[in-house]
Length: 246
Image (cartoon, rainbow, N blue to C red; front, side, top):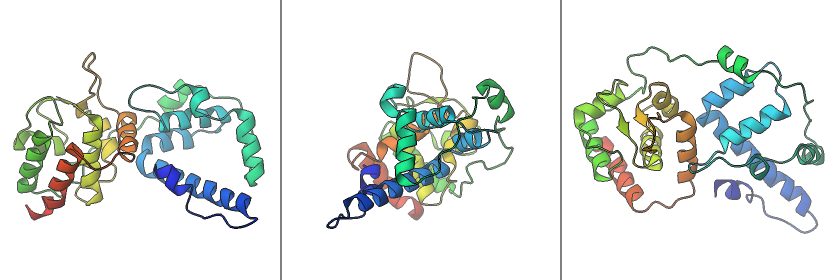
């Protein structure tokens, strides 16, 4: 829905449809890039730190950025072919990067591993004890996790020192909750990387002990953009509207 909006900002006029289409396409791509830079620090650090950024690297980046909650998309379903990418770039007058031999992914991952920074307040939380107690009620109200969460447990989570690892009942509810706190400047905009780096929650997949990673959180965040604020999302939204009053 967001891409659709950004791709239809400029209205067509007589005899100028192609130019307008080009403007809309560039506007959409511009906002996709902004979203990538703001929400996927892991991908930016990993891929933009490569000595050579090839077409295959671009495909991997695009695939990881657009991954869904339910399944991995086939490469041919979510990416243009090499020929289409080149043709589109030439049509828009965009410079085409030369395709260079692919580097060893294992070597790159080892070289660009992101260490967990030591800090007393990784979430950069400004929440008071009263606000945390209020948010614990919110979490329990919508059954965000597989267990009841006390005020002390939630306080420990915001300190990145959880007393127990909770399992997600719905990744999108978690994304909506934390992105809402971030939007109100109550926690860091980098909340996704904090949750992933400190391994705060288990994924909703009950068949394995898998910590929620940044890809899970990014996919969930992208997923809620196409949802209306209803049901449990309305409940969370109502709590978030009142949090600063507590």
